[in-house]
Image (cartoon, rainbow, N blue to C red; front, side, top):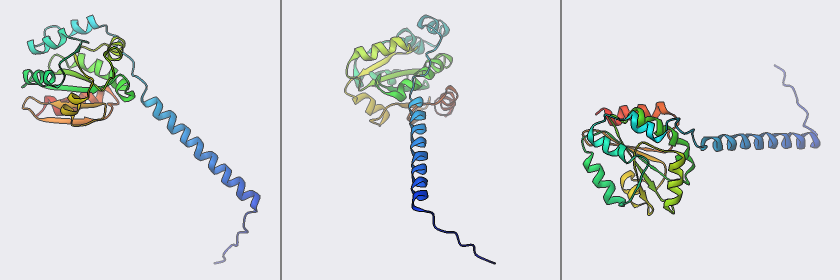
Length: 206
């Protein structure tokens, strides 16, 4: 076997190669950044109005009907009020979504929760915790843009969100099954199908 001797690249060619590789790396970083930015874009609101959501959920069990009557409301009371509500709903499958109006991933998944809370709201209780928003007006403005079929508890200090989700980050979703079992999902939900799958696994089963 004969070895071929490759002559060294001239200095100018080597320099051009380095520049070309650097250009490829920069392009890759830009593409990744665009994809990440796209991933935090707010998902499209549900085509249903708040009145239509309530009408779709008519005939739900009394505990769930009480939630639907407070659809899109921002409630006070902090952690004690959240705990009291969870106690009232014991024995019912529950989904608690912690969010904030300034949180990109929260905004990106909100349309998903809009849709699923209507399709699953006859048998699953949904609650929101607006955790860490500096003021109520930001949260209310966001809820007017993305109305939901369930109430949210205002948690300016973040205490309620931390206690319920065991996390200081947002978004976080907590599932409770009928037997009191708890599952915590950290991060954004990418699709309706994924959220519905987790509701079946962690709230409706077990």
